[in-house]
Image (cartoon, rainbow, N blue to C red; front, side, top):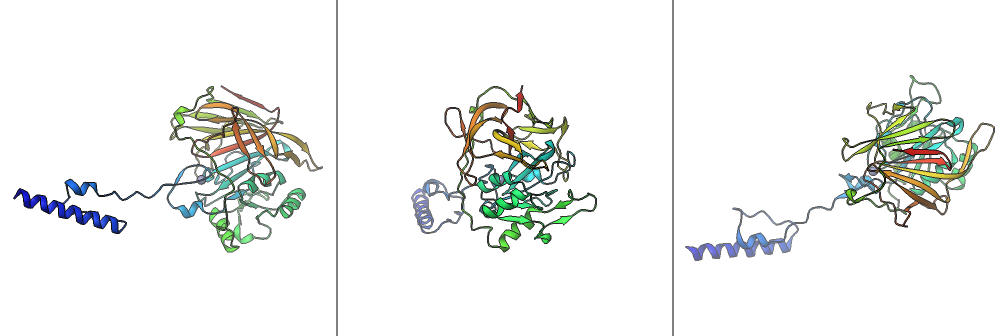
Length: 347
Ligand SMILES: [Zn+2]
């Protein structure tokens, strides 16, 4: 009896080993085997895929093999007027004319059904879109941006030539009424054969153990742009893994579609030189290449950093004071480009 059972188990074990060696997925033993069968090699779980921009897990690798899209977004019509910023992997905030910023979300792994209001291109935003190899969605352009889009061969998704990719809402006045969706933008790239013929020239690093991060506490951050426009971020440990709630002018900055307050996981403050008025319209110029100083806020702490960018298409590389590459907390990153000397405080 005992011999018969042992022999049976050996045979089952041998069969399983053979099956496991010969194909990817061995059928489950029946009845559940004990003994030698347990030693059959386990089927490896599929390797998790992460978004290269924000380090978040994604369900389908196809999503992150696409070319990213950047969109020029209005920040003039009042807080809470924008749609889709919450779905971006990165968001750039940079001054435009009139003492107010424009925003440029960069989309890859999440789709946003409504993105807007879409505004006209400014040339220094191209430096940021180009470094990700992103296509750039906009509605019109400044003369400087028009010149540079042609000169630098930017993949331009201009509403002027692509009305089918955008729509206009009646409830808002021009030029604050142009909207699009990431679906439409990615579809247009696909139509041109530019969606997947894309190779990444950049690679970001993420914290494997965020608890190891140390630095002075930064639970409330205040950024004062020249002219008085003020952004604050307030740390909230109660959000999944913690995050910085965004406020503008003292009020929560909410997404128009969801009503939810925007939350940043990383805030990179980039100090730049050369901010000056370019023309009688008050359009600005600034220098986003070369190198400079900055400050990183993540996970409730802050530390000094440096940035460098060789050319307008090169990636902006961020390093800590000790020369190590800045690692990001997984989640949305906001880059606040500020003239050197602008007031940044935290507590
Ligand atoms: Zn992402």
